[in-house]
Length: 319
Image (cartoon, rainbow, N blue to C red; front, side, top):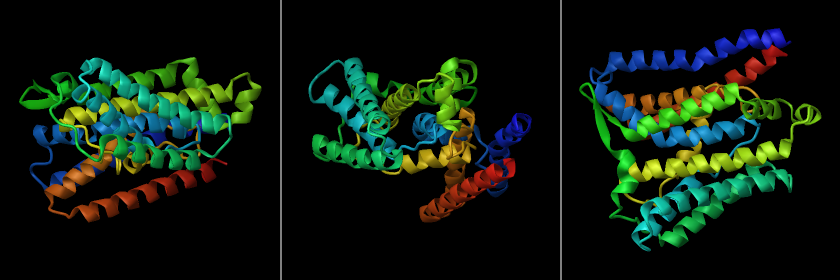
């Protein structure tokens, strides 16, 4: 059985890349502007927030959990850090740390409810989604926070790479993926995470503290949502209480399209980056073709169903 899994992993990892290549080829044939450096840079800027959220979502899904609250927690973190800096005059770097602490705290709360009270992750995060949304609206008074200090919008700046402008936020996203890839691939905590997702009881019998791993994963995911909040603030230049309304589903879509199994224990973190880019490429390409946004949402939903169906068939074939 172990030999079969090792043989199948490379092909599963190649799937998202092949899908991305085919998608890019299609839209290249439909629009001359698609392959321009300016447009491809724009795609990466558009997906950098969802891409970073997808890192946290990937960690949770690898443990056979799910986090529906990620988008709203991100929005709360963005409102906290911007409101602290603008309304209260707190040093912007300290305000950013406060926002990160809030999102990490929400992740920790999710983890405690899952590990201590043994509630299903779906129910827990559905509840904290609504809690985070309500707190965000109440705390911000449903008002957008503007006039942000430069320190909060720094990651929205760009630099020239040849003739193409590249966002610092894009570089930050790629750096975070590289770090997550290394940790999951080459460290003991990464191996423990996969073991818990694959079979928590077997992991416990080998000496792994399953609850501690899960608690750490949910808290770390919350930290990633806070970083995504900073990227969102940097990209838009405001603290928007209405941000995050679709990011939770977009992040799950990215993770599933990237080949991470919703049943846990299987997946490569870089696949989530590819999944986020696939979603971004579809939306960008369809926009260039003049397709209405409602059809973009329809196609994204179909892609998710196909990806989950492929994962299900793959699991049955491996038995």
